[in-house]
Image: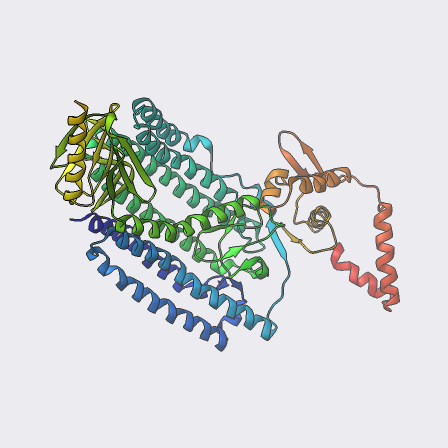
Length: 463
Length: 120
């Protein structure tokens, strides 16, 4: 099975449910407390024009979902890793943004209709229930402490065990996963502090509604923190037993994604149930007319509101307040990460299709491909051998594709090597230069042979 | 009790909070001895600066509507001990309202009728 095929299976298992989830969440967005993220009185939902907007949105959503569900079927059969990965990444962007685009269009139409019909009653009044404000936060550090401590231990072990000769990378990998537990705790605190909508004039109802929602969010964050703790330990074990590290990380990540998604599904259902139970008690208070604070009904911008996170008008989740500095920073980081995807795709395609060049000039071996540049003076070579079969390697950093291995790789029990070759060839050179081992190879075996001849000739001259 | 805050009102937010708590006490939505949220809790819930809530609480405390202690936070006073006098600025406000009513042709009797529901 090619790398491209393996990665396609991972993407298929982990990302296909997102498409379905997006469809299910957005399908009912016209029936929520808000109509496509815009406030609209319940009695106006039956207006013919509103129904038409809803029908058009559903039609667009249905067909784009069907189209997006069919498109990736061919991806696993694309022989080029970079193209397959780029298409997957673009597909992920499409499944996240295309339904949002239909939502934003519908939001614009509803706002326009409200203006035209004089339905807008911008009040800018926000409601707060004094009893709800007295509800103590559900998230306590002590609840999360065992998970946090248990996530810290593998990080410490990793830093002690993986030291020197480039092994720190393994330590960093474990640390990144371990820190995610802290991130879940921080998210739990943020969601716990978010304002809970005042649904009616009865304070006890509001308080119970707030309590129920906060409890669900806390349980979700706690479950995620524990799943992450277990996964951090698994990653540490995979890194220590590196013989099955790659398959371990791949399967571990898949199981991890499945668990997180199952819990995400659970929370969506729970919040849905809570909202359903409280639906008969909802009054006009719920719809504070602040549509102008909502960009496309999706993004919240209110400088007068100090909340970092607020309840989203779409689905059951939360969104950040762009009027808040931290919220804006989060959005900029997210946008940068999204913009990095096409840049990364172009880079991968360039890496896969730019042939590697290995030449000998002025008694120096020059290995060059895109930004990678090794210069090995022939006189510095302590030992060299020809290799016809590459050992099993794990990429530490660099590129690892079916036709390209460039960067630092680890051969278990042997150490860290610098690698610059096309693994599809049959002939490679193993060089030792100042205790650093290089595996190099040209674009084809003939080029590698030429380099080998140059080394032999130089060694003979030197003797 | 629900507090409605209008971000674009001419009345400062701390005064809106203060006025609505007084209203809540007068119409019984806030019972004597009822616990009020902490300054931080209310500020977080409203998404406003805690200094604003603190200012409102200080005002209410000064006016004798609430009392605070370090352990239990703020509570509505069990017995509101006021003289049967309105403060000078409230009297001024009342005078303004009555003047406006007179200009608009509202008779004394009608004005009393208007006041009745507020007394409960």
